[in-house]
Amino acid sequence: MNLDAALDRYDLKILDALAIDGRLSWRELAEKIGLSLTPTLRRVRRLEETGYILGYSARLDEARLGHAISVFVSVTLTAQTEEAISAFEREIAKAPEVMSCYLMTGGADYLLRVLAPDLAGYQAFLMNSLTRIPGVAHIQSSFALRPVIQRPAPPLG
Image (cartoon, rainbow, N blue to C red; front, side):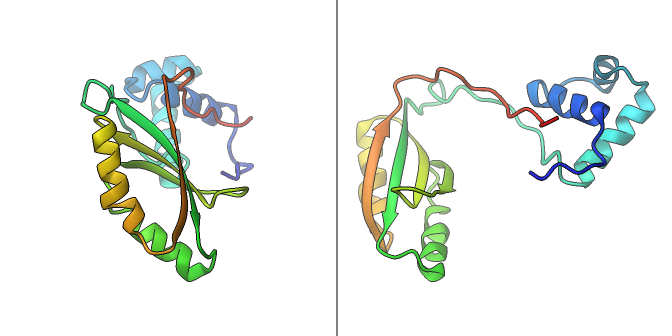
């Protein structure tokens, strides 16, 4: 994200506080950043309207919800044309197992994070979804053993 010169230290404090705990009350947020309630609310609304705050969500326990396996999948396409890239992105967006998909530089064209209930579930995703997308040349799967660090991205500044 290109940080706008209009972001000051209070805006950065708001972004940092909400990235850590998006459930803060407006009063708690105002106290944390050192402003009164009304200017804090105005700033949050402006940060939402200008796209610095994209939304609010809860972090869920994926394993407790039946997603015991997290797999990072490198995908290489047969061609890197705009048409091939668009076709892959349209198709991969339909797969509910894919939590994130990044267009990459380097050895692979895409890096996916896929959730599955077990090895059979992951194999089903491979066989019924990923390998059926036209233009997929190579797939490499890496199974996550456990998360070590998970944190929100801090605002720059």
